[in-house]
Image 1 (cartoon, rainbow, N blue to C red):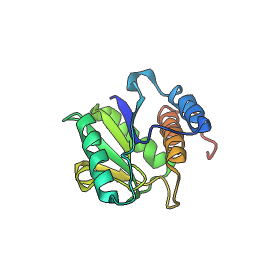
Image 2 (image 1 turned 90 degrees about the vertical axis):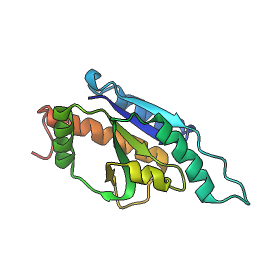
Image 3 (image 1 turned 45 degrees about the vertical axis):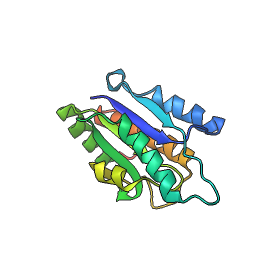
Image 4 (image 1 turned 180 degrees about the horizontal axis):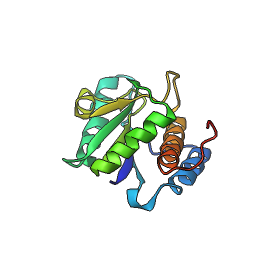
Length: 156
């Protein structure tokens, strides 16, 4: 199983890059975890948000591999506890299917991306800045792997 994060937005504050890189470096090597950034489409005063999300969506879909599972990080998705996420990771790893997680742009994702998604996962009911969502995602993925592999958990 290989895991990657496809994220709209290629300019993040240094603290986001630093924290994300720290957690990415902790991921197991067999996952070949990586980040693929897609520049956000330009938003103009007269343009619609829909045209920007459509353009971004085409770029996201172009990066997807046919057999890859897509998990959309979306505020309307299902929420998981850390233990539930560890269980999902264990299931995915058993199947061995490659996974691409997707974080959309400032206006969300296109209908085509939403339709392609195999699962929608909500990190929180709170509205999160995209950079913080990246860091939270990486931390929870690492925590899930830690639980999955039997590392001690402070809640036990």
